[in-house]
Image 1 (cartoon, one colour):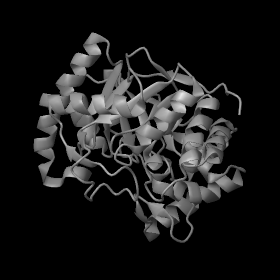
Image 2: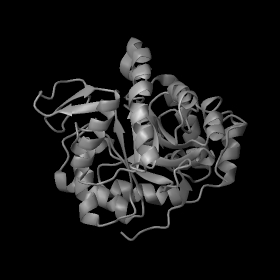
Image 3: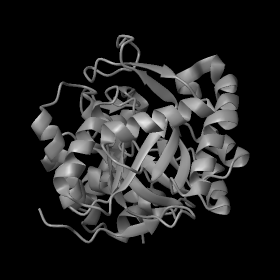
Image 4: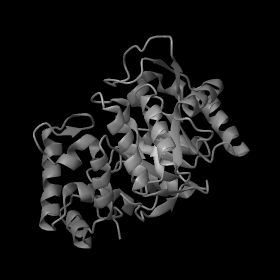
Length: 339
């Protein structure tokens, strides 16, 4: 595959420019299945060869396996213009035993513990650089400080992150060691709290701004624009249903989709069909209509999945499709759509 001319957008005030399609490394940690090593690395190589310049990963993803595989692909590709993003908040303990609770089927046999302290963030970042085999990391995100992850302990974790990890990342940015700092969470409300509490360049919000639902639109996204925070979005298929359609067993927020969600997606898909547009294409392109969105961080485990994403993000979608979705009440009248 030859390098495509994917559009680029700025990432906050960092000076970085990222392609509107990024590569997300979560599935590369053996999330749902034990992946073939060569195929996993080839998937990242395909992303790089296709022109994607943003690669996002985390120590959580396969307890470091995603970072190892991405590092191998970076060395094989030889590309020097890649924006590397990873996360802090968990520290690896190689001799502690893996334990349970990460949700990954496979991955490395190393334990992880939460640590949002200053020293914990520094140690986590050093470990990531070693796994990736790099001497710099461009974007560093504080990971999973949300109610989904921590429940009633969220207030303590938020305080620890702002007093510790945030100070560490702020110092690294000021020294030029990293170019952009942010948070990576699944809740727009927590993004908003962080945006008020600190000075961030970017935030990776998963699943909360999609063709199906836009809970971040009313409050958080205007705040992001006001503060110059450009967003990376994950989960734009809402765990799969916007890619597969309302089929039996379709997933929504990592669970079987309930009847109301199946019905709404069926209605959206019907509108897409009337305009000759696959549902996944509309779902992929819709979030880029918002001016606060810099890039969509999309997971893949096979090279052909990356190739499909590149095609679908570039294929035409008629303006009449977005108009009909609004007319049918499937999108709010004030929701921004691609031009």
